[in-house]
Image (cartoon, rainbow, N blue to C red; front, top):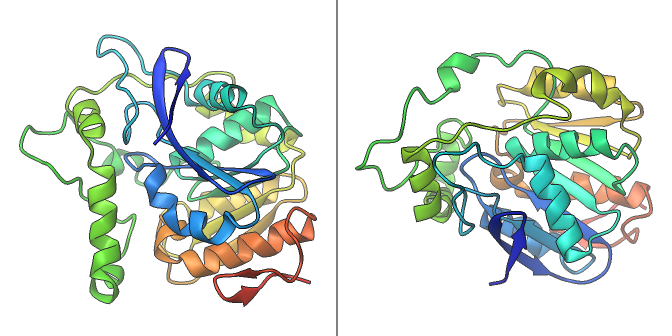
Length: 274
């Protein structure tokens, strides 16, 4: 259970495997542990690393009276602290936004990029999905909203409940009860729509068919030169978690196409692309 100092923050992370670094970035109110299915699938081939962003998981809380650190700066500092050069970066939702903003700063700095649950353009129902105030003092397990489907709760209740437990940490509850202002500059969220076109790293955009950001993901894939799009049928916002087998398979095929993964290796029982 290692920690590393990134700027002013004590950051918790997990890693497994050796070789080419594959960095996994979680979404809002999630945590590194949510990527456990990707650790199992990819750690035989890569040095898989995931960290809890500040105010999430087991990392530190930022000061209540200050804006939280810029998450692209945080990613930059984390990569430097661990000496992770030219990584493959996969991120979901907030983590994908972080990866895209970092990639705009480093257009060919990643060996490959796999954003999921994120895109460009106006966000649908943005006001309805935003928290209107601090979390109450009684909630202990954060609801998942439409990040997962009710079908998963019926089909695999343990996997569904596990997600509630692993992300509802004291750090995250404290941050939601005492919200900090967000920092997002260079690029800003508004600048990202145009600046993603400068990214030159190979990109695979993955999105669930049921994700409210599916149109935005399509727009991202259409804007970044050479980017590929994969839509997972019947999958929600957290496509990497609920439909991990298909997510892992399509990512392994994409990485094999770019000679980042040995062809013919097995991921989740399926052959990667030859």
